[in-house]
Length: 340
View 1 (cartoon, rainbow, N blue to C red):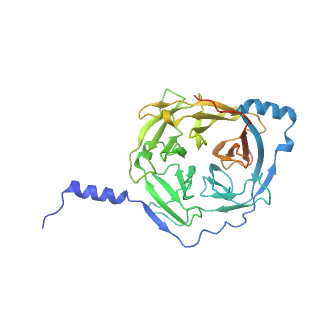
View 2: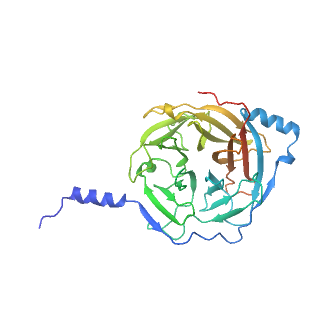
C-alpha cells in the first residue's frame, strides 16, 4: 500500500482545520434574566452654551439626541460594535459575550431593549470568544458579521443568533491579542475592510494596519494589506458606510483629561494594496458632558432622508467611572461632506 507523502498529509490536515465550524440551533436564545434597561434623556440637561460648544466641535453634524443607558444585569454594558437592521432595530455587541437589541429611543412608541448571549456552550479550544469589537450587517440577508479581539476567527450570525459559523482568519494572528479587528465594514461593492487598533509602525502614531477582502471573507483567505492614516494619537474603533459609498472612521484617544473622540471620512476608492488610505477629520467630541469611550458606530437614514450617525460607548466594566452613552448625530440640512 502506498502511503501519502508527509507534505500531502499536512496539506489535508490544514485544509480540514480551515473549514468553517458551523453550529445549528433550533430556537433563538432566550433573553438573559432581569433584562430591564433604563434610559435617561440627557438633552434637557444641556444648557444653551453647552450646545453651542458641542455644535462647534461636531462640524457638519448636529447633536440630535443623547441618552444614558443603565441596567443591573451583569451582562449589560461594554458595547464596542453597533449596527441597525432594515426594520430600524439597533444591535450592540459587547466584550462580555453580550448583545443588546433595542429600538431607537427617538422613535415614537415605547422603548424596548433585550439582552442575549451570542455564544452559548463551549469550544474545542477550551474557551469561547467573548470580546466583540466590530460588526456589519448584510444588507440583503440581515445576517451579522462580527470581529472578536484575540480571536483567529470571524463570526457569522443569523439575525436571531439561532445560527452561527466561524470563519478561520489566520491573518488576524499577526495582530496583538488586545488590538485586533477593531473596525469593520462591508463596502457598497461587497468588499470588506477591517482595521486593527494597533499602530502599523513603531515610530508612527497615525498609521494602522488594515485588510481588504474582495468579498465576504472565506476560510483561510489572505486579504490585501494596506494602512489607514488617523489623526495623530487616535486609534480606530469602528467603520460605518455612508450612503454615497464613503466611510466614516471613528477614533478614540485617552488623555489625562479623559477620552477624546474623532470622526473622520475616507474614500475606499483610494485603497491600494501596500498603500496608505488617507482620512479627513470631520468632528470631535471633547465636551465633558458627552465625552466617553465611543467604540460603536452605525450610519442610518431618518424618515426625512437625513443621514444620521449613531455612537455607543464602551464602559470598560467601570460603571462607577464611565457611562454607557448613546448619541445620535444628524448631518445638518444642506450640509455636504466634501471630498478628501
